[in-house]
Length: 171
Image 1 (cartoon, rainbow, N blue to C red):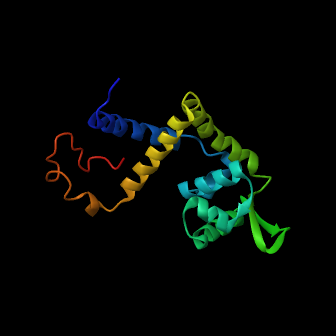
Image 2: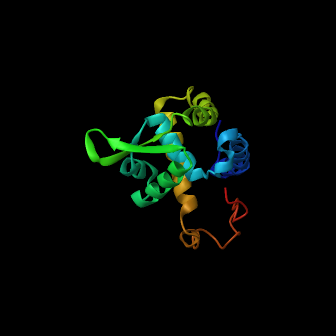
Image 3: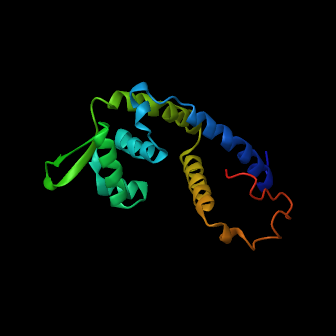
């Protein structure tokens, strides 16, 4: 089956809001609801849950943000009893960040639903196909984050190109 770029864009513009809506409807565990966790917290918690305890610098590198940003997030979540910082036994100057034992089951249950859905979607694909999905989503995220001025001047005038979706959707 051959799909044109415009057909794929249309399909994805219709699909993305449903995906985001479903992700938002995954219930936050009762014991975490009052903590007002943001998407950035979800990424940080995912790394710690799936990859284990790590330093602030390691988290910053994975999240692609400054260590000071991660340090603030860790401080915030530590104050809420979600994370703990402990001394690195091999280097006492470093601190290792981990999810507290008390919160690990709730966070694991919360994040496992999304992980299970991705596993079902990705398992039938080859390794190269899975990498293509990841690369495509990263490219979309980067393009969506680009300033609007980068898109101006391409093609015909605003909203005039065939199949042009303009700014009708942020997704």
